[in-house]
Image 1 (tube, rainbow, N blue to C red):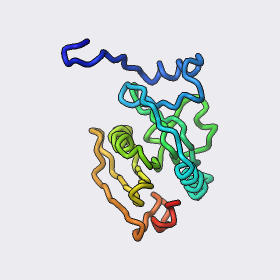
Image 2 (cartoon, rainbow, N blue to C red):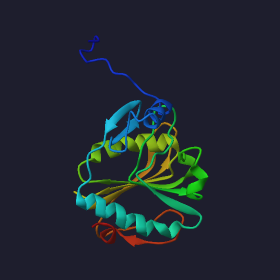
Image 3 (cartoon, rainbow, N blue to C red):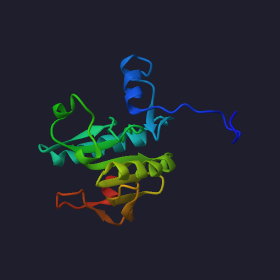
Length: 186
């Protein structure tokens, strides 16, 4: 044990995690994400989370053809971060990312859907801000609201955070559209 009384931990890099996946050490059924050098277990999705993910993925297709929606796929976040958001809208076509994962600079919007994962999704806000993700939404199914964050800083903060209730409206970045929050909640 170390001086703090905790067991020692082994940190990983994004390259190591990618190599572990390529070698079969981490498989498709291993629901983990690399966050701040640690492999974090992702909770299983319930039916409400799954329905919300599919519904919002279909809505976000309004960004096509100049961008596309990536469901639960990695974003490159530096040497120790490889988050897999529920949904990410990224510029370009899927084949633009055959040799690398998209970065924060490639994204338009990242969405996490939370029933029980609010704490980890808020922790991920700092990672997404450092990556330069311009807009980050947490759809909080338990509280029936959307947290909308924007204007990221390199030190891991978003200058703008709004909590939107069901009676409010939200605009997907760059489209000039407005959706009611209630219509986005399953």
